[in-house]
Amino acid sequence: MLEFNDVTKIFNSDLLKKPFIALDKVSFEIKPGEVIGFLGANGAGKTTSIKMAMDFIRPSSGQISYHADLGRDKVDAFKRIGYLPERPFFYPHITGREFCHYMGSLSEVSRKSIIEQIQYWGPRLKIDFALDRVIKSYSKGMLQRIGFLATLLHRPKLIILDEPLSGLDPIGRKELKDIITQVNKKGVTVFFSSHIISDVEEVCSEVIFLEKGKLVFNGEVQKIINEHLKMESIVRYVKEGKVLTHKVADNEKRNFIESLIKNNFELVSVTPEKPTLEEIFYKVKSS
Amino acid sequence: MMYLNKIAIIAYYTFREIIKSRVLLNTLILGLVLLFTTYVALSFTYGSPERVTLDFGMGMLSLSSVGIAIFMGVGLLSKEIESRTAYMIISRPVKRSAFILGKLLGLGSILTLNIFILSSFTLFLYFFVGGEFQPLILWTILFTILESLLVLFIVALFSLLAGQAISVIMTIGLYVSGHAIHSAKEALADKSIVLNTLLEAYHYILPGFYKLNIKDFLLYQKELPYMYLLNIFTYGVIYSVALILLSVIIFERKNLD
Ligand SMILES: Nc1ncnc2c1ncn2[C@@H]1O[C@H](COP(=O)(O)OP(=O)(O)O)[C@@H](O)[C@H]1O
Ligand SMILES: [Mg+2]
Image (cartoon, protein in one colour):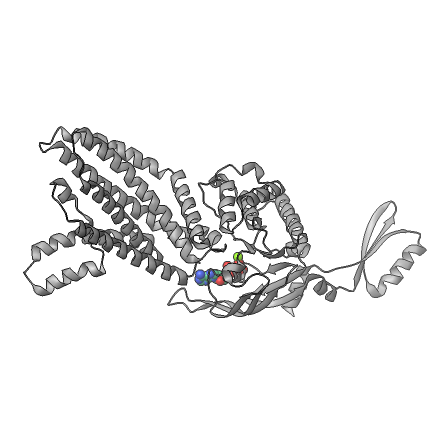
C-alpha cells in the first residue's frame, strides 16, 4: 500500500552543529491486511518516518510511494488513510462531536455516515459519554480515543497510528489493542509505532524494527519467534499436592519426564519455551 | 468544487473556534465602552458632535480591528503548526493551499464581523446626534475591512518565516510606516528628486496603508471621485492577493515539524 525506498532524512537544525541523520536508507513496504508494528526506542526515527509518510516533512533522499490500492495521487490516497499523531492535540473550543464532523467532512464523508460511524465507534472506544463536551476538558486518554475515532470515520483502508498506546492506563491499553485487532478483522491495514515490544508482539503479525535511524529487522512476528525458539521446555507437575514447574533443555526432556513418571508424580503439561520478541532483539543486537 | 468546499469547511470551523473562544465578546464590550466614552467626550468638545463621533468611532474601529488582526493572525498558522492541529487537517485529502485559504477566510470573516459590530455602534450614535448619511461612510468601513485584512495577511506571512514576537513587531512597523509615509511625502516634496522617487516607489513594494485612510475626507464632507476610490480598492485587493499567494508558496514548501 505504502512503500519506503532508501529513505534518508537529515536534519540541519543548527548551522554550527553537524547534520543529524535521523533516518538512514530505510526501505520497507506496508502490505495490505496486516497489523504492522513499527518498533524502536525513543529517538529511533519512528515519528520522523511517519511524518514523511504523511508528507508533513520531506525526505532528504529516497522515495515514498503510495500504491494504486490507496489512490491515484497523494491527495487521493489520503482519502483512504487514517492518521493519529503522537501527542494528539485538537481544537480546544469545539466539542468532540463537532471535531468528528469537521474531520469527517474534510474526508468527504456524508453527514449521515459520520453520525453512523460516531454511533458505532463511540461506545466501543468508550468516548460516547464525552462527545458533547469541549475538547479542552478532555484527558490525555480521552484525546487518544477521540483521535482514534476520527481516524476511523472515513472507513480508511490503512491507519497509521503514532504511539497510540502511550499515555493510556493498563485497561485502556488492553481496550485499544482489542479495537486494533477488531478493526483489522474488518479489513483495515494497521501500521502503528511503539517503543514497547510486548505490545507489538501481542497484536502484530509483522514487525519493522528501527534502531538509531537504521532498519534492523523487518518480517513476520511468528516467523522470527520460531526462528529463535529456544531448545528448552517448561514441565509442570504435581508433587505433594503442589504444582511445580521445571525448565529443561530439550535433550534432557525425555529423561526428566521418565523420572517423573517413575516416581509417580502427576504430569500437568510440557510446553516449549518461546522467547519474547524483546529477548530476540537483544540477541540480534548483541550478535 | 471539492477544493472550494474544503476551504469553506476549514473557514467555518476556524470561525466557530474563534467565536467559541469568546474574543468577539471583548469586541462587544469594547463597543459599549466606545459608545460611552464618545458620548462623554461629546460634552467636552466644541466641534460638531457628528464629526467628533465619526472621528472617534472610526479611529477606534480601525485600531481595534488592526489589533485583533495582528494578535490573532500571528498565531493563526504558526500555532496550528506548533501544536500540530495542522496535522489533523493536512492528513486528510486537503491541499495545503486549501488549508491556508480556509484559515485566512475564517479569521477574515471574524474581522469583518467585528468591524460590522463596532461600526454599527458608531453609526447608531452618529445618527442619534443628528448626523446625516454620506456614501463615504460605507467606503470608510470597506477600507477599514481591507486594511485589517491586509494586516492579517502580512502578519500571517511573517509568522511562516519568523517567530511570533518578530512577526508582530515587523507588522506593526509596516503598519506605522505605511501610514507615516504619506506625511513624509508631503513634508519632503520637491526637496529632493531621489527622495521623492524613493517614497513614490514605497507603495509599490511595501503596503501603502495611508491610501486606505479616507477619514479626513469623510469628516470634512469632501467628495472623492468614484474612480479614485475604486483604484484604492483595487490596489488593496491586488496587494492582498500577492500576500496570500506568497504565503501559499512558502507553506507548500514548509516542513511542518
Ligand atoms: N526537526 C528536527 N530537528 C532536529 N532533529 C530532529 C527533528 N525531529 C526529530 N529529530 C531527531 O530525530 C531523531 C528521531 O526522532 P523521532 O522520529 O521523533 O523518534 P521516535 O519517534 O522513534 O521516538 C531524534 O534523535 C530527534 O531528536
Ligand atoms: Mg515518536
